[in-house]
Image 1 (cartoon, rainbow, N blue to C red):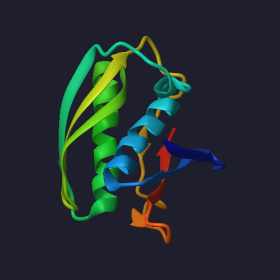
Image 2: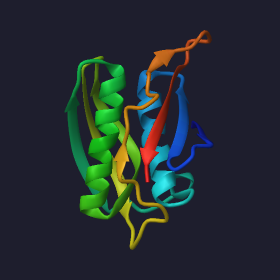
Image 3: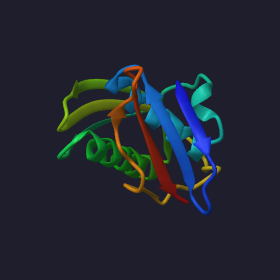
Image 4: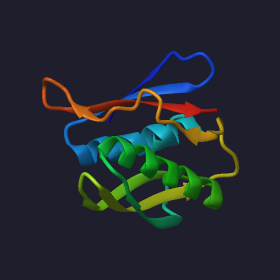
Length: 137
């Protein structure tokens, strides 16, 4: 998992990189989970919540942000940190995935929203997929 948390005035800024587009989506979910519950996704937990998510968007950047927003919504509904993502379908315009997670009593940091600011999913010169994501806390 390649996630780096960067300085930002009032929010949390995260740079994510994956070998594949699927890897980028998975790592972004884990990175967000580690914000909700400090380093939670770096540990092994028992799965007690599973949720299917389907999102459509106009491009990869909007798809990732909308997908993370949907995961965040499900996290709040279920009081769960999702740390495993089984991607069933992924194209430039659609993702279908099964989220697995663990219910928690509380979050260490509450994320209000996933923003589009600075988000730009692209392949870098080494062929890795990357973007920055800013979370409103």
